[in-house]
Length: 301
Image 1 (cartoon, one colour):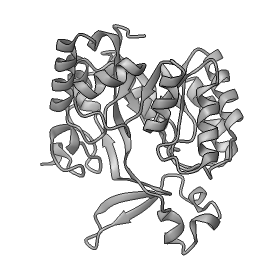
Image 2 (image 1 turned 135 degrees about the horizontal axis):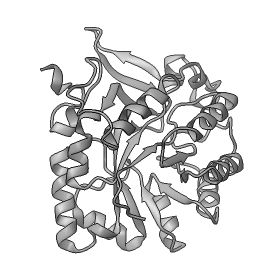
Image 3 (image 1 turned 90 degrees about the vertical axis):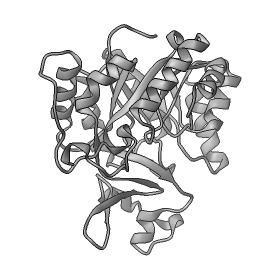
Image 4 (image 1 turned 60 degrees about the horizontal axis):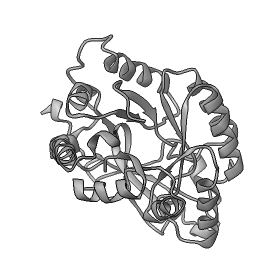
């Protein structure tokens, strides 16, 4: 439901962590001032430290603790087994689902159930947004490559079309940006392993595998089949602007270390308890928000 208060969310963990680390992390997140927590495997179906039912059980446990919990689906579905998992998530009977590909959108629409569209769904204008709204979309996560200006235009057009007040808008605001997906596993390839026998090497890289240019610049982060930004995207100084143009939810992406501090920073700015942040760390980026190259830090220019 749309509220007048800007909410803070934690996206699904895009990395692959051991089971106990994952469970411990979410128990800690239960104590954090988060409004919404997304759970589930959105990157690779071979990551089975927690099985589908265990994700659902964990989600219900967190929901009982007072959080709104959303189950996330895979962003790239390639096999019947993955469709089976998708159907189980859609049929959970209790929790909202984040659809990260159009197959999940179709599955939720067929069930006449409301859903969240993830940032991997290519919504680039208000007409596409309206089409998905008619199929059951109640919240959308803006594609990460769009700018704040483009978002403002989309929301203005949605207002003119008469449905803006019926949906929530969420913006990926902190973390390594999910940029692209492939049928190939880059992490396995980096270790000279075939995808079918990857030996779960992603477990060795809890924050992904850094990829640098010949000039030693961080260009990308490799995360299994997913390509991410080389540096952390940070829109903390833009929170006030997001609130002004109509963003309902500010999303943070999980990281293994220092997550509580990040949450505290964003919560304080959202609630107006701290002064406006005027810059981001030198090794962070925010270029996409300003229609610039993604690896640009506009405050460092």
